[in-house]
Image (cartoon, rainbow, N blue to C red; front, side, top):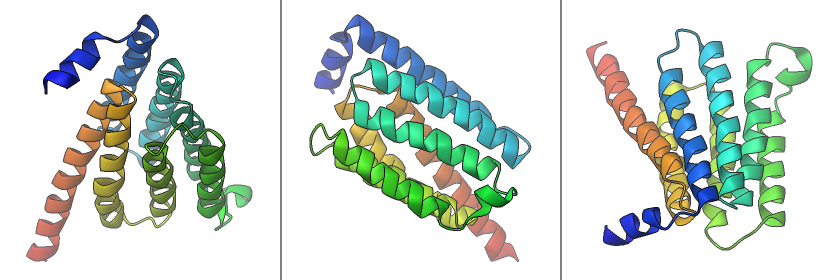
Length: 182
C-alpha cells in the first residue's frame, strides 16, 4: 500500500493532467449509470471514454489510448445500430480485431495484453444485448483494466473500474433476486 501512495506522489505534471482526465471520466461514468435511457447512458459513456483517451495520452499509455479510440467508435456504432450500416452483425468482431491489431502495434510490454483482451472481450459481450452476461463479463474485464490502470498510474481509471465492478456485482445480485422471486 505504501508503494501505491509513493507512486501517486511521484506523478509528473503530465501524469497529474492524465489523472484529472481519468477522474472526469470516472465522474461521467458514474453519472451515466443514472441516465434513464440506454442511448443517453451510451452517449455519456462515450464522452467518458473520450476523456479516458486523453488521460492515457498524458500518461504515455498509448495502447490504452488507441484502444479507447476504438471504444469511442464502438459506442457510436452501438448508438446508431438501428441504421442499416451500423446493424451489420460482424461489427463487434471487426472492432475487436482492430483492437488486437492496434494493441500489437502499440505494444509497450506484457501489461498491454490485459487491456487488449479486456476491451476486445467487452466489445463482443456488449453486442449480445444480455445485461446479465455483460455484468459477469465486466467482473473479468474491469479487473483486467484495473490492473493495467495501476501499472500505468491511471488512478482515476482504476477508480472507474472499481465503480464498474461494484455496480456489476450489485446488478448481478439484484437481477438474480428478481429471477428467484419469479
